[in-house]
Image (cartoon, rainbow, N blue to C red):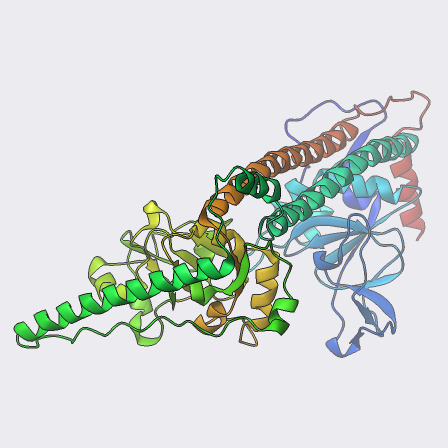
Amino acid sequence: MTEGNGEARELPKGWIKCKLPNFCALIMGQSPPSETYNTVGDGLPFYQGKTEFGTTYPTPEKYCSVPNKIAQQGDILISVRAPVGPTNICPHKACIGRGLAAIRPLEKVKPKFIFYLLRNLEQFISKQGTGTTFKAITKDFLEELELTIPPLNEQTRIVEKIEELFSDLDQGSENLKKAQKQLKVYRQVVLKWAFEGKLTEKWRASQIQQEKLDIKTGEELLAQIKAERDRRYQQQLTEWKEAVREWEEIGKQGKKPTKPSKPKDGLPLTETELAELPQLPNDWRWVKLGSISTNIQIGPFGSLLHKSDYVLNQIPAINPSHIKNLKITPDFNQTITPEKASTLANYVLTKGDIIMGRRGEMGRCAVVTEKEDKYLCGTGSLFIRLLEQLNSFFYCFILSSRRVKTHLENSSIGTTMQNLNEDILHDIPVPLCNPVEQDKILEEIESRLSICDQLEATIIENLQKAEALRQSILKQAFEGKLVAQDPNDEPAEKLLERIKQEKLKL
């Protein structure tokens, strides 16, 4: 099996093409009995596969008191199954399981040279894995692997040059990753300041001074909201009475219309609860989410919706997996017919609703836009319908913030999977401020996060370029283009001949 580096090319002077066993010993791993494993450090470190690998060296998670197949310090460990191809250098004597093989350089061949040589071929080797349950390569495959070997002195120069260039790349990549982490922190700071009134502090003061903003106290805002909730409830009662009258006129055929439930005012936040929350501006106040919502509803469950109800390309049902980065990404393989949707009217989404996953990752939510209007809230989700004067995008950001995520994680039920219900959502503390200021806060958030998005895209692009450059360096190294050849170097052919003679003696 020849290396997969493209078309055949002429070898530099002193280089030779040969198979792996000509310059390395090969030890295939074999897992010892499970009762010999431990995590207390008894015996040799035990490596089973890629999961223990680091950038260059593995970290032991288990030990083996009765080792079977052993790798020595300096051996190259290669993952031979699920996945195929990744490599590390064994930092000490260790036991290896069947997910690994140890490649031991012979004579004076440098371990780091073999390590980088195989790293250069990792993508090629990974594609050679076979198997249905998981991909794997065999001992025969490795023994047939044909590689190009330079003179011993040139191997040393290649390793030194690679490590010099990689050191610069590593420093640059580390700085980029550090900047990436700082951006994540900054995003959270922006959201924290936004919902504590700090982003709009100067704007708010200016508006009040110029009498451009009719600032109402938290109590006045809440009173307005309560009045609006009562008005909507009375309207629903009127519509219900009319529906009952029509139902009676047609001879009470079909199901009697259900009387609307009176909105839950809920208990106000206690002094203890308020003491645990951040300080708000004087004209803001903390309220419970239920007190500013007209409906908080979990998706259909039990016998309401079965797997057999799903069809292709009809009305999407939105579950947690369809909510990503504050947006809805429907799956048109998981939809229901309009006829089925008509039986689930209480779970149909309306533009402006906030849909949230109630299982798994907490705080995953998005606003229903005109595009998703009339989609169905899936079994694994719930939705919040706010009063009309409130900005759904403002509260969607709040519900996805770190503070709310922590609150939900602490409040959710379920041992194997976190699971939310309506009562938990009703009790979430959220800030209430003037709707005009909500719009201004959103403007400030989007302005700052837009810059973050641009910076993050640049960082990702540069990290990808660094990785591409890393692969280019390896490719050049093993084509003989990275360092100069020295005509005085002993040809690799003589090195292999010495290895052959030594193996014959053994």
